[in-house]
Length: 174
Image (tube, rainbow, N blue to C red; front, side, top):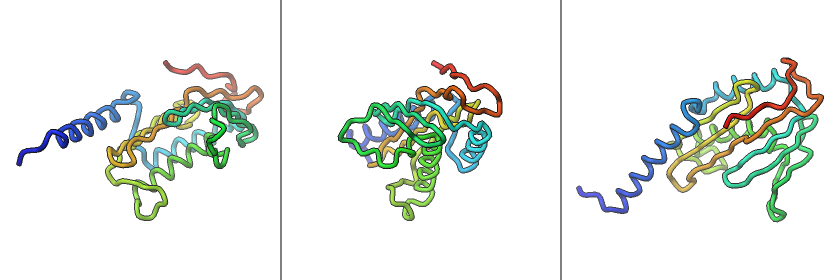
């Protein structure tokens, strides 16, 4: 059986996408699992940071988010026509919720309100110090395509309580 050129192109593009996804962020990205989420969330909880500022890139949208007392108090960079839904979805806890929903949709696509595909590649990198999700990438090569978020910067607010006593701006890796 001879494959037609468009099928070869799609096959090659899919393979390239999976190779890129496996190497995105270097070897520090890991497969998204319930255990990985639980371990990182425990680290985040232990850090006891309730006041922080972050910049998130959601696919092509970049947002500056202010969190105080564990609630989003300000979001900048949103187009006036965009409905943000629940602002707390853009907090670190909200990002953990996204990971859990993505994993649930992947494991039980029929039980989810979100379209999922059992063949999606889901990779994540957690911050080594605080445990928050730094980078998440889902690539299916199908109709849902690629979804990605990155925390471009994270800074505990002045006066934040940390069990480690290091409530100062964190330098970001290039």
